[in-house]
Length: 343
Image (tube, rainbow, N blue to C red; front, side, top):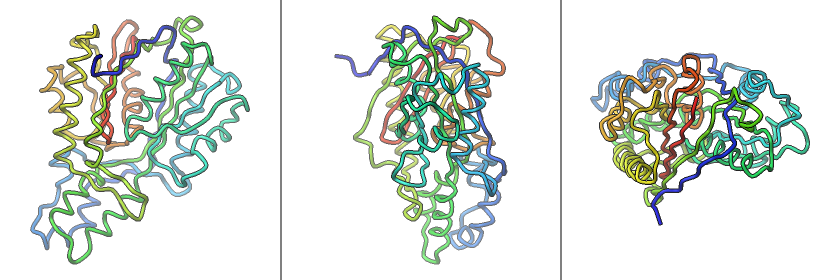
């Protein structure tokens, strides 16, 4: 028995992928201003987010907009781009980390906003930053099984409540340097949305074949990043995430190659967007060409589960038929997922 879960798809294609950028730009210098007194008291320099993570700015939703509105907008655009009518959708999966309530599922509001048919299954698939990629795998498997013809995967993120909690915690008069480091990852997060339509390859020769995916679990590291509700905030062991997440990816990569996958010369490596250090570590560990990794974290930040599909939507503007794309993600837990798409 191998150490990876490996799934190969027979008849699944990516028909469209879209992104919605949240309206307001939030520069990292804004967080420096909010934490000026804390940094001065703890003798910590300004500019840590940009210098250490490489994030100059991220985005936030304007007043009157929300993460689920963004997901619905992305979904509507994806349907139009794919030339698929709402009534043809048999499955809607929302892969967001963000949610306002424990129930109902975020998916139900998006289902209603898009006017999807009553027969369309709809549910949330939450798996930290891997929810969207996992959603594509489930949808592709259902298409292969003949259960549905089309699926819509959506994702909308809004970390601003976590930002507010982190700033409140760090601006207490007794906050410590360790607490700043624990909340550092929270301040790298940004808002945005993405969507994709998945359909039958035999009906859509113009589509981009989803060849399959490889996943690997390292759940012994489940306590490295824990996000609670808005009042509890998020606590992250950034060093532990980098160390153990990188090993999980490299183990999955090596095992996948033993299973017959060959990803050493892809035309694009679309990774989950975290920081400069994470990107550099992956490049060095598996030996891929740095120039083939599109980077969006410097100006979008880490958009949680929407980060990878938003980056793929941007990269899709320059991809050409016949090129090969590898989507690479790591999610708190830890889990990793690698998915190959033939463009």
